[in-house]
Structure formats: structure tokens, C-alpha cells
Length: 530
Image (cartoon, rainbow, N blue to C red; front, side):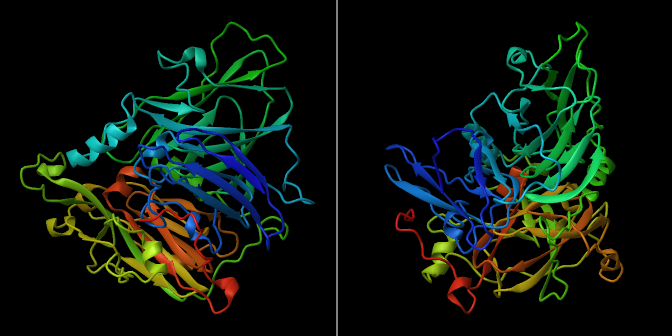
């Protein structure tokens, strides 16, 4: 058992070694509230939490905020995860500064599926604003438009040499020549997919979202908000030079974005560097969609019997087709809204813009049979079928329905979701979709409208990557499959936070199975009351 106390605003690395799959490892995190403010829950992103949705963390989905002066002990249950995950706040946009890495080592008696690295380091990519993140969030909601873009991108909390304020504090990674290192890359940013590269060095990808992948060599990474990528780096370049590692935004939209580049330094510690400037990495143009999807499309499960047994559901019980849209609402009377044509921006799944409860959590309402908190009629398919990716779409498609709806799944049912991006309000964008409580197999993707007759013929059912976050490409589609073997309430949302705040979210309820080991655990005694 591993116990850590998390301050109200901090970043640290939690490490654990996975034990036998049947027993898991339990991490208790004690969160204390001050006497004047409510404390935000801090979920472990990507941890499945078998039968334990009580500690999953999304505010008003699985718990209410911790009241002033109270405390809550989050019990984190690891099961099949191995590799890199992370934890972060799940209230408003507080995760901009409240986050950290979670490293899960191989269980005792096993090793990595690659040679043991000389050392390993986390690299956390983030965003930074000059203004307080709470004020930014409040202004964003009030305006009805896009939020202010970040003032800097960061690597391990530092913007780097290319910004005037932070050059002395640029993060430096010291390596020894000819040694191989395991680097654990996390995109903790709020709003953007990022390109990442290290000058003159090749990267060997070996994992994503705490699941091993077939190794492949690349000179760049495209990583979505919420996603993790593990890669090996061999220090095999001229040791007399410094080398920048860098990250910049990828976006397919025409909206303003942070067009700066964050850097860190790779330094060979055994040698005196020359006076020449560090080598710079090549980073693809900001709108290079092909580079983004090409990287993601190369991910494959390792598919060996020790580290990565592939178990793709083949016979599907629930086939779901979810459209992902940017929408608008009319501006409220006496408000001045900054969305298109004076409207208020929104987002939806199947034209339902999710309304987060405010007086009770969905989990507590479900468990205690409280009425009036949520409905259970989330649509399996959009009510209206249209040319989802057309250039000009009818205006009536722009206004979604505002509801708190969930999709109910039977225990052990097999689920396929086709995520279909749309061009409603000319708002086509990439959508990194994240599912709590599960990892899913990404069996297919493509551009344009999904063809139910042709596209499934090209599904990868042999070694698809096992992930908890996947970027649905702009004006494209992605298909995932999973088995609903984890009873509870589980949130699903776009991990671009402005889209999530606009309503591109929903929740699943997975019903209890027949036997006690297939049923939700009892709530903890210190569960925050609503």
C-alpha cells in the first residue's frame, strides 16, 4: 500500500508496483479542505478503479465537492495498468496547475518488454497563463466565446529558452553518452494537441496510456490532452553539443491559438559543451493534420502473452454512433455573447449538450435511487442524420438540447462506439475523447463520414492499441470497442477543456453483475455529502 497526502495545489510523481492482477494495488490519497474553500477531487486519469467509482473523482459525476473543514480519503485501485498515467483535478479548469505523474512499474517477477533503461524521467507538457486560472474560467463562461489563449507552453513547469522570463530556469535533462533512457511524456495541457520532438535524436515508442505498444521509431510525437506516451531515447549524438526538446500546438481550426514553442535542454553531462547554440528539433507546421494522424495511426498493441494480451470484443451487444459537434445557443437576454453572430458557444454528443448536476452527483443519485438528478435516455444514434462533414450545414443543426442524460449498459456487455466529428457551425476540430473506468481498443479511424458497410471491413481486430484517450480526427471518425465489465458510473468527455465545459460529455452507467465480485463496492464512510 502506498499513501500520499496531496496539498491543495501541487505536482509530484506517484510510483507504484503492480502486484498480481487479481488483487491489485491500493493507493490511499488523503485530501483535506481548508476552512474557507471547497476542495476539488483529484482523480487518477486512466486508472480503471474496478468496482470503485467512488474515488474516480469528476465533480458531480461521482462525488460532490469536499466541504470546508472536511476530508476525503480516495482509494485508488490499480488492476491491469502498467506504464505511465497521471492524476489531475477534475473541477472546472483547476487541472492546469493541480496534476502529476503516476508511474506503474511491472509486477514483481516480471520486467519491461524491452531492455532495462539506464534511467527514466517524466516529461509533463502544459500550458501557462498570466492570469489566475479561476478568473480565466469565469471570464470564459461569462463571455460565451472562446477562452483567452495561453501565454506559454511548458515542459516540466518551465516555458524554456525562447521566452524572455524563464531562460535561467529551463528544464535540463542530463544524459550519458551511449545510454538508453525511458521518457514518460504526458500532455497535461487544457486545450491543445501538441507536437513534440528532440533535436537530432530518434524516439522509440513503447507505450501509451499505461499499455505497451509494438516498438516503432519516429522523430516526433503527436500527443493529445490527457494522453501519455512512453518512449526510449538513446543518447548517441555528438556529446559536445546541447539539443533542444520542443513542443508546439497542432490545430486544424482557424481560431486563435498559442503559437509559441516551449523548449527544454538535452545535455550530455560527461562533456564540456561547445559555444554553439543548441540544435533545434523539427516540429511540423501547426495545421499538419497528416502528421498528427500518421503518428496516432502507427500505434499497435504489443500483443504478447506476458505484457499485453489482446482481447478485442468481436460479438458486439451495443453499437453506438456518437456525433461530436460544436454548437451555439442564443445569447441570454441582457447578455453580450462572443460566439458566432452574437451567440453563446456550446458543444454536444449526439446533439445533447450535457448539463452537469449541481445538487447531487450522478453516482450517489444512482446508488441511493434519488430521482430528478439524471435521465437514462441518452440516444444511441443522432436523432437527425445529415452529411456530417459538409462545408455548409443547415442552421437548425447548430442548437443542441440541454440535458443530463446517461447511457445504461448491462454488466459484461460488449460495446462499440463510432465517434463521428461534424462541421456544425463550421466548427470542425479534433476531439480527444476520454473514457473513465475503462481502456478501449481503437479498431479503426478515417476521414469524412463513417461508412457502416465499408469501413468495418478495414478494422484492426488483431493488435489495435489499448488506450483511454483517442483523438478523433478533424472531420473524421474513430471506432473503439470495450467490454463493460466495471460496474458504476463512468464519465466520458472531450479532453479539450473548452469543449468539455461547453457540453461535449456524457456518462455511462454499467449495471451490477449477478455475483458480489461484479457489483459496486459500498461507498466509503467519509464520502463527501451533497
